[in-house]
Length: 267
Image 1 (cartoon, rainbow, N blue to C red):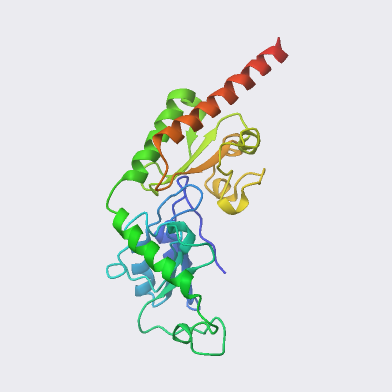
Image 2: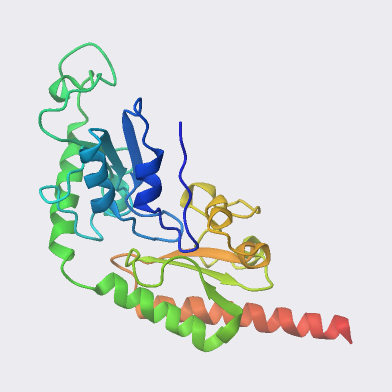
């Protein structure tokens, strides 16, 4: 197993991938977008490199599908992962795209369900729900609603907290729904603990209670004091500006109150 680094924006350098491929390399796997800071990876370039090297290429597009366009005809991705609940399908259903002509070992041996890739009775309602969710995602994809509401959120935070806010990740080349910011000089986990009405995370959604520095931010070289104050916000299809305003107001009250207490203790 070979790991490649990321830069300060959380981006993988295709040249690093190319240099890491050995004669015995059989698979390269790169996240399509980072699940904490939202940085989009140069998947097209990496896919071309893998094709030239005759190595299979997989990308986990769980965060990206339904939010950014992915052209599987143009980009020579061999395998692509989809997580249903990321596009409003039920939790517990997903899909793996396998390019035509590629055969892999079945996940579960036995009967011939799912083209022989996974034996056992299909969960038809969940599969149908994933299909319908994909249709709806394609319908919403052309508009910029997520980006607009995310940018509005960031603007309001900047307006209230100025230079106490630090944006983590690539400012331009990122998912339209993800906003990872650090409250400099504060502990992100403590902020969320004291604000139960604000639903967010200090890292990926799988590690919401973590009080340690995110390994993603650490790999990006984010200063420890900045990384400790990181919070990952996500907006969705139904997020409103009113909800954003309410969140900013809650955070403003929290910081104002905490600053008053600190000032009192100092005096």
